[in-house]
Each structure stands twice: as C-alpha cells, then as structure tokens.
Length: 531
Image (cartoon, rainbow, N blue to C red; front, side, top):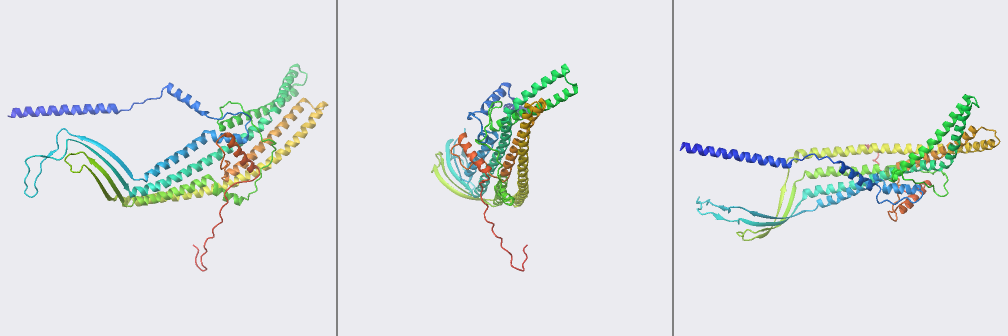
C-alpha cells in the first residue's frame, strides 16, 4: 500500500508540474501577443502626410482676382488664417463638450441581455433548520441553459448635482473659448493693418525708386570709367562712388522691406508664399489723421469692461466658484433611485418577467476627512483667480495708457514727417531746375531725388505707425474690428463689413456698450465705523 500511495503521489506531482508548465506557457503566449512593438513612420508615410497637408493648406479659398485692399486683407486673414481656424475649432470643441456634459445630468437607462449555460445541472441538497434533517435526493431550481434580459433606469441625485455644476463650468468654458477667439481675431487684424500699411507705402513708391536706381547705377559705372581713365582726382572719384553706393543701398533696402512686408501679409492672409499680388489704397485716399476724442478715464472703464482677457477671467471666476460648490455637493450622501423590467427564461420560475424598484442611500465616510481639504483647495483656487484678475486689471490699464501715448507720439511723428517731406519735395524741385542749367552735379541731382523719395517713405511709414498705434489703442480698449453681423461668410461681404468698421474707426465713431450707471453704496449711520 505504501508503494502504491507513493506512486500515486508522484503521479499527482508530475501532473501538477505539467499543469504549471502549461499555465506558464499560456501566460507567455498571451504576454507575447499583448506586447506592442515600436513602429516608426516610414519615409513614404511621412511624405504622403506632407503632401496631403500641403494640399489642404490653401484648399477651398477664394482666389485673389485684383488688388487687395486693407479690408479684404483683414477679411482673408480672419477667414483663412490657420491660427484663426484653430481658435474656431477650439470653440467648437468646447461647445461639443457642453453637449456631452448636458447628457451627464440625465438618468442612466441601460439595457442588457445574456446567455448562460453550464455542463452540469445546478443540483443542490437542503437541510431542515428545525429537524436538522438533510434531504437525500438532490433538487434542481434552474435550467442548465437560460436567457436573461433587463431594462433598468437609475438616477443618483449626488451624481446629478455634480454633473449640473460640471455642465455650468463647461458652459463658461465655451464663453472663455469665444473670448480667446476674439482676442486672437483682434491680434490678427492688428498685424494685418501694420503689414498692409508698410507694404502699401513701399509699393506706392516702387515706381519712383526704380528710375533713381537706374540713374544711380549708370552714374556709378560712369564714375568707375572716369577713375580708370584718371580724368578726375582719385579721391574725388572714390567719394563720389561712395555716396552713390550709399544711395543705392538705401533704395534697395526699401525694395527688400517691400518684399518682407508683403510676405508677412501673405502669410497672415494664408496666401501661397511667392504668389504675386498688389495692394490697393482706398479710392481718393488721403493721409488723414485718425481721430481719438475719448477721455482717458472713459478709456479705462471701456477697457476693463470689453477686453477679452478681462471677460475670460470673469468667466473663470464663475468656473472656480462652481468648483467650490461642486466640492460641497460631493460631501452630501448619495441617494440612488432605480427601477427595472427583468426577464429570465428559467422554466422553474413562476414569473419569468417582473418589475422592481428601489432606493439606496450611501455615504463615503472618508469624505469627512477629504471633503474639507477639497473645499479649501477649491477656495484657494478661487482666491488665486481673484488676484490674477486684479493683476490683469493693472496690466490692462497700463496698456491703455501706453497705447494712448503711442498714438499721441505717432500723431506728432507723422505731422513732422509730413512737414519734412514737403520741404524735401520743394528742395528737389529747386535742385532739378538748377540741374537743367548745369548748376548742380549729377550726384546732387541723384541725391536730391533719393532724399525726396526717402522723405516720402518716412512720411508713409510714420502714417503706418500712426495707424498701427490707433489699432493698438482700440485693441487695448477691447473694441472688435469685426462687424456684429454680415450678410454671408463670403470674402466680399466680410470685406464690406470690415471696411465699414475701419471707416468708423478712422472717423472716431466707436461702437461699444456703455457702462451702466454706478450703484451708490450704502453709507454707514453717523457715529458708526465704516469698516
């Protein structure tokens, strides 16, 4: 018997060892199957993605069919600039998230169906608790194969309260995304205005620069020949060439500035880089100084009310306040209500279909410890937001004052540049008249023409800086360059709306919400402290 038992035990051990090896092999196979290998993108995949992206960069854009005005440049930047599109998609994403958050407040309605089977019958024995008699014959109360199904509705009041505040927070995040889009749109329009005026001023003088460059290069070649033939003293010829080269370099710099400013403008409008286009000034354009007649005190109030950053912080304050209330709600006990319709195909049941309902009260005791800490953290976040908003108030007021001073300086610089241009123009006229009688040298004629063109360029650049300063001031005030409504989203209608706003800005007609009348604070009775 001892030999037989030892043999049996050895067989059992071998079977256990074989079972362990089988389990280890199965685990190894599963682990190998679940392993994720590194799969770098191939050159063809990267090239295909690059080609697809480059095709989409300028897809579905209205072509440029003529000279681009300032309003059209702004319209194209707002509609086609990729940064503006990204801001629009972020706003759309937050709106979609709001839809999802709204559904979280609804009860949970779940339907389920199942199939169950077993290889052996669910037999059982029973024992009488009074007589302690155990049944001899097994009993069956469940089929070996059965089908189940149920449709249940559950609603947790605690989850509803939390979901409600989360939906309120998401609604404010949609408004925050809208304000961020406003800020980006104003920034893009400001950049377009700056680039447009610089490019337009250089393009307008391009026709005057090229003849002067041609004359200066010819004079330079003639001077080199004179130097080689020693018709003039070498020092005089070298000084003459130096002056001509400085003039040529100055004029070529203007041409390069034109190319750079037009490239920047093309990038803002999302035009293909290298695509030629011309700029158009308004019909009957005159360099009129834009009017700003608003008192600085009112500017401060308008800026604090309308700046996108200020509105964003105000919405963020509501988000932080909802976070505090959400933390308080989480400390309450959860009340769950449920009801369902059930079906079971078990043939031993008298009622295969039935309905049930119930209620359940639950509370996480650890909330007694973690809840106050969570509330304090939410309150600290709200307080930090208040300080951030105060700091932004100071920054906004500073930007308003700086922008206004830049406008005043730009106005003064333009008036001086306009006066200098008038003087240089008259000097050039006198020099050219004298040159006709050979009273002035060729160098003086060329220099006079170059100085007159440079004075025009300086005047136009001063006007561009003035326009940029005016735009910066209105952006600092939080005024929108975009019209409230347009007839359609086509370039033509957007251009018309932007042109109307630009015309109003130029004339000093500003559109904004008037601040409400200040509510007088209640004064403390005489003899009582006020703090």
